[in-house]
Length: 117
Image 1 (tube, helix red, strand yellow):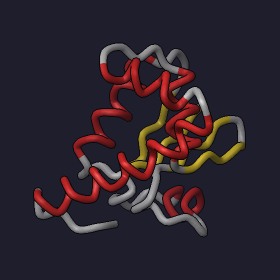
Image 2 (spheres, rainbow, N blue to C red):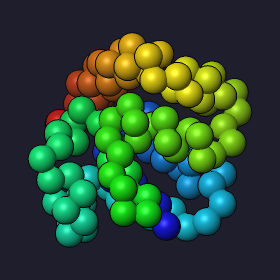
Image 3 (spheres, one colour):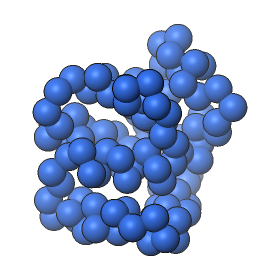
Image 4 (cartoon, helix red, strand yellow):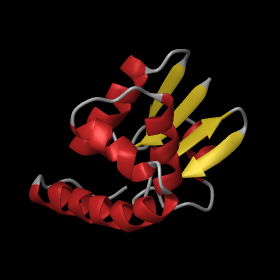
């Protein structure tokens, strides 16, 4: 089973996690970080959920760019997500791209009037 803690009010995060959940074989548990699920505190302990999603797979925790890379590698994305998969397949490219995506997310949340986590 894969557990994903993400910002349910972020349109990019929500679309990305739905894409992964729909295309992933096996069980995926989506956990909105704005909710009350007790796993949010457990999985997000010591991590800033405003700066990245958290994924737990087989007991291992992945955060931020590593979480996104893992999910892209486990799914079969197409279109723009196919390009993202290519970018995140390489750790150096992922380290460069992730801050840009995170900044864009922050800007969109501000425009939409949504508060940080």
